[in-house]
Length: 135
Image 1 (cartoon, helix red, strand yellow):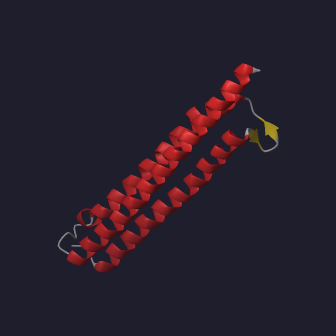
Image 2: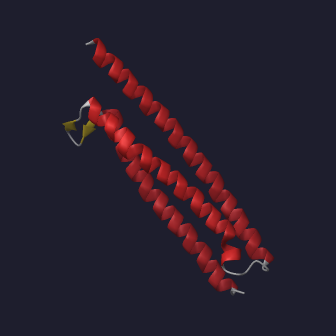
């Protein structure tokens, strides 16, 4: 059985790792999204084909990875008492379950936001493609 101090450090480390990974990933996802929607990288214009390639090849896989990591960490936090062989500690089990559930809800919210962003970008790219075909 793991002592409570070690268990608390493991919980804090898992939460810190998730938030660090999530924060850095969301920054990158948002940078790519902005480039796709605005059509510029810094001050250089990018073509519609390049924007579509960035959407399919960069943004979608990264957004899927962000959601997957979010869910993975929520499950790891929820299972932490069992991984630390502290499942007999009721308070730790309840704490990890509550934190894991909160992280899971946050992951669902993030996935929903990314799904909404995906629909907006797809519509924007389709509208641009339709406008280009009219010209």
